[in-house]
Image (cartoon, rainbow over the protein chains, first blue to last red):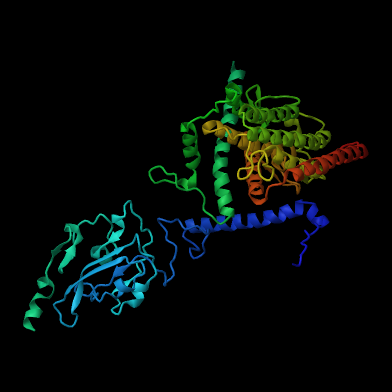
Length: 208
Length: 362
């Protein structure tokens, strides 16, 4: 094995004087200090807002900009009428390597849609954020673009999202009240079926 | 009686000024280091949502320090363990008594020097008090009954004693030039002009002494790059067995010593309360223009000038502290004994030679 001898470079006389080197160090730090002070002052007057004065993001108030590809908390996309786009094909549940998705499909009144999820749960305590569910979905029904990163809870149960939260990412546990009108197994009322299609598709369905 | 009242007033003025400056130092330390490192720094302490750029953090710190549990190790010498931080702060504080922060005020027939104690050998007094500060450190290390603390105390003592010699000899040059040890007189002496335009500040006549003084004085304050005694992150320091406000007092003593060094550098090398071209009756510019001022404006300008210079030095020392990495202990000792000590001795010799050559004085 070849031995490579690393010699420490001898300091020149100029470097051995310390003072010039200290001054050049101070030049750098003072440069940053004055530049950042000037930027902070300008910001307080609303100027030069496009130039950051520090690398810090003041987290709860100020979020770090996310890449458009970033995989954050899931959401279910919604049709105009307020029902999930999901057709209950179970592809995401099948592909999920962590097995964190639970879907119970029900019959959709529209024969072209065939199925819809009566229940759609994601256990974020298990989810690995691989994004396979998004890639596999043929209906663009599930996405991971909410930008929500602060997924944290005091219990494992609280990590489980159901269809209410997935369709409305703004909701936070504990959920205030059920906002869904189509028939679904409402986890808020202990998994009972609730809602009907009448209000959503009542009149025009009868005319068909 | 009135004299006593005046003295008490001066003491209160200096005491509160210095202690508040020390508290602001903790804020300055956080904010300045943050801003020069492209960070923001502590800014979360708030009262009713008012954050005041983190200025409330010293307050929050003080509350925290006072309410923390005060732990005294079972094996420790309880009396000395308690006494050590008080020693540190006490000697750092009393040294300020000799610092002149302004010219004399004349009230009626009473002349008040803006200086707590008019000591003829003020310089000796200040250095004596700074040297006694080492007792706080060695006592803290000794009384803790902790070998790491003891070693930290020994490191601190060796360092402070080594650098005090260079410090003292560097000052001798200044004393020779101005011919007095009275700090107020040294400041007065710096009011003269060389060649009619250059103020005869210490930095002008003793530039070498200034650099030696600042280096040695920074080592005296036990802060980076000379912080082997405590070595926040790697070495265990002499105050390892201290908690709560006792620990806080060591930090306070550190800040007080930094301010002390800033005051000394101002007084000895940057004209103290002198403002260039300002005489008691107003400005006399070298190009012949004059600007008459009332006497009280002159005194206030002096105090302002002194405070400004001290704050500038504090900022500079803080910047040095956050710029340089720590010396190794052998490097520290080599710098002290083989670097600063001979330089300061040579400086004294050169000063003596110059004074002999230009015996009529500057």
